Length: 560
Image (cartoon, rainbow, N blue to C red):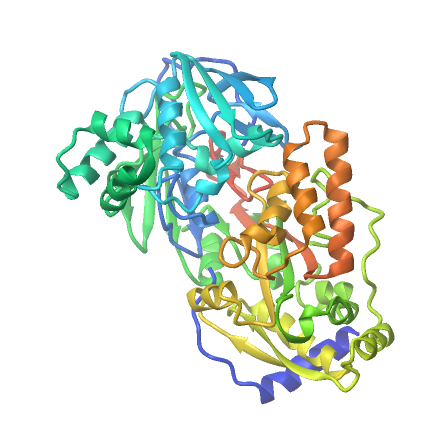
């Protein structure tokens, strides 16, 4: 089968013409209240990434490259440990006092990088900012269930949700919950008010926002043209590193925060460098110009592992690669057609021939680390004869023509070519459309595709985030449901899963959802991704989370 696949690639390379495009682009903490001793010098680490940061504001763009840089500057109330359980960070503990009310006790003695104190008022300011229409954050949905944030005292905050929301602690560990200095938030809003030339004070603005209604809609629209400007220029958090400088397209530099509430970092600085080409990043690692690199072609694992001065840092992360189907378009409206396509996908062959065996094949939408994963879930097996039978039953025995969209990621292009050749065997002519990343996302969000290839990260380690955005009917289009899947039973179960507080019952709910998804086949989940990270051997103490976010707080550079 693998030989057959590579023959397909050779044949397809000679006959299809594709449009030009661009690149697609936590560790346990101690109980100390900070160190008064000057941190020892640990050197200057250079970490190279394929893409630049798009935003240094936790309310900014929802992309992993930005989170990987922001992760050292900001901290949230909680973080997720290796078992994906919430652990205290800026909160010392929390309690659910009724179905919709949670109380968080905050760590005392925590200082923002600007010298201001972290208190309950800062928590309130940050959460209300994320959901503020004037900020128009792409991450507002992370906290959309929060109805009130109440300051009980300086170090106690109460969060009330609109409805019972079981995974709230995990959602608070999301990068959108990174705490920005309240002084900077106030300065940012004041700047936006001044830019809009509004004749109101900051206090009046906050009062109007609290009241909401038509009047605030107009104010939010005016202020929203400049919100985020100050936070972007002055990214001030409580993290173990503080912002030093940024050169767009080149680097972001951070330095150790000596007044960090826990043990200060050992490194003096970290330079997050932009090196777009895989080969160039690997060459930098080989030469020692970079100490750490993130992202490289799966065919390079062996080269790095065999080098005496480099080592890989593989982590199975909570993201997946899938082939989605537009369930509201042409033949794909019939689940038998979607099942037929599912039966033509040989996941093992794809894993070996395209992904070099890096990652894990997936049966359904959930990775094995997540609540609700079912190792006994029956997936659709590779079965061309069954595929032909299903197409005949659906009235498409003579075949039909459709398109598959992808961006320019080499493995996705290879997967599209593989599918093109496989589906030809059952009479389906598959035309490949390769688009530039931005145009691609816009096209599949608008439903211009039949099939598409995309990935989906799960930034909160909960099955809700792994399935809701992709398959709840309210999320169709750009929010995530690019399969335009609309299934009343799945909607009902997803809504139950959010509200159910009993973990065993939640598990059963998500297992039932996954079973329905295999039956309905709005998407074929191919594999769980494996992070492609590597470092020089002199780098010690590096930790990389399930979310592919390096933690450098314990890193030292031991020069050979």
